[in-house]
Image 1: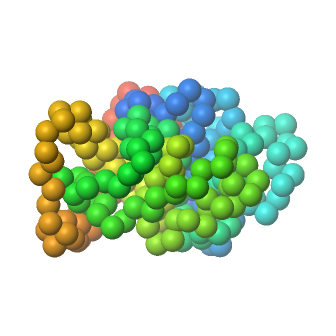
Image 2: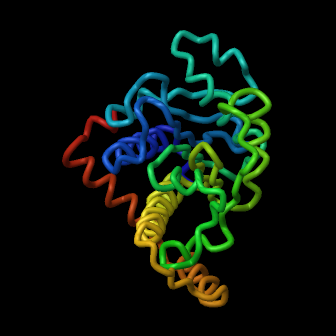
Length: 242
């Protein structure tokens, strides 16, 4: 995890812009945050009302998870963003970067009575036994609902929020975005496979676990992916760094 706050701003702005490019966002909703303090309680988050595709590093708000006065400042964050991300950064300090989206295919999976993602191809196997599923949706992520959701993650990188969407947690922006990208891809393939109405080719638990380990041991994959994404923006939209 890079500790330089200015560099974290640049990385998070990159993640937000790429989420828009890949259609992982939703209007001016959805929120990305990254911790800046050792205990995780200070964090950067995207501002309310600004489209992901226009976020610059300097636009990101620096908030304190223990300070409810954050909602009284002139540039106050979205109320659900504050509630959910402050609770997560307080209760899950290991989750340095938290990406919450209503991306199309992950949210489709969250709408199914059985929201499990079976190991039908390599991308889904990457997340085998690494997804927490919330089946207790009780309205928007405010107040006690935010606290309830924040306690569900455990040691898993993915929280599939039933009737709601997706939450990704990771020790770095690069890892979180890589997980977001590949989980959405895995969900897309699964939903398309279901749409054929034909029987699925599901791998054994043994093969799924082996493939998951191979993914986790792959050297520097997430960092290289994210550096490539930053390089494209450096050429095409360098203002994200400002």
